[in-house]
Length: 526
Ligand SMILES: Nc1ncnc2c1ncn2[C@@H]1O[C@H](COP(=O)(O)OP(=O)(O)OP(=O)(O)O)[C@@H](O)[C@H]1O
Image (cartoon, rainbow, N blue to C red; front, side, top):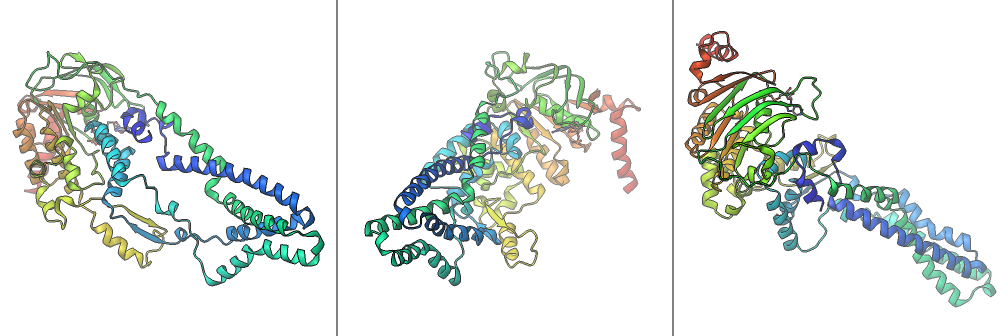
């Protein structure tokens, strides 16, 4: 339920802090278990105390209860759980890794990938399948499953003595007062002593704190009720008026600000623009001018605050968002590598072809990722972020486990550019669905070298048939030359629109200014 609720939230909703829940499923189960256990302990404690008081009224009841408390009390004081020390955990169970990875995909950092890749359904289905394959064993952290204390010899001896303290007290008491003790009374006292000891130990277990448990359970249900900020329409995409050349857009007087923005100015102000179907559009402009925001609106990750956005002649809100997302690809700096294997990272572009390794490798080739993946020991089966749990190591640089940690982390690290290539490969994989009519690429220049960038642009342009393509870039050259239209932005507004030669004809325009800065840098170098 939590996974589903997390995956269903759109970006604006998830950025509203009042709607975000940090609760994970295992915590809810713990809370529920803890609460019912605690209730049971309290009932048992009351009944056992009543028994001891009743039967033991002749044999020093209060002192006897104190003897029962001795061991749990000392245990609590000397508590030294194994997980309080430094440790390093490495998980090599494929299903467990997958289950945690699928769970992780509902986190904030993957939200844009999951939404733009339309992956919620696949994740939920895979989660259920993997869970069933594993059987219903507990999958929470080992810390929670392993509650044993370290045992040294002294503690074993002292513990045994304390364990038997109520017994010893009873025997001692019956020697002093033989007439006041019956055999059956002693037997009942003995069993009560064992029960009371257990009950007190459990009640002192901090996991069972009633307030904490109730708080956790209370925060569970609102997560299910959260309504998305963005409206979902009824219309399927494409519809009868959609053109086969690709998606078309018409923005009229669009304004937009992020909920989380600290700035007074809007990220987009009075933006009006027509993007014909099948065109290649390049958006340029200085940092913070609104290029990425414009692309996010076209990809329907956000809706304009005012003004209108038409897609193929109809308001964007009239379409089913899942249909629109099935028809578009967004390739941006905000995307992330999933904590899964390369096969899954790329295959998730088109989950129905996940089993087809040839198609996955072909997409990797197009995205420029195949070469480096094949050089890895496990090739396409390499899991990029294997689960490594480290505890109390951050402030101990000389701890012997640091070396092990490095070895494990090394297996899972790839460079920023390589990550981008994997994400690009996932985008090419998506094209195999044959549903794509809009491709948006947001500035790969920050991660890719110039050769990688040129290859990416060339391969994307080769696949342009039936697709409208919008690129954001800081590098003028190959793309601006091939663009049907260049949009130059400044401070959240559109300064100029036209082809390279049209914009360059305006000597004092923003486009010419940005172009000359780059050209002069090259001239100065040469
Ligand atoms: N997720 C966000 N939350 C809050 N504000 C944002 C967010 N993303 C962008 N902004 C703000 O919106 C404005 C436009 O940002 P945007 O990222 O669209 O610009 P850009 O032209 O793509 O910049 P760059 O070239 O640096 O990538 C900026 O003022 C930025 O601070």
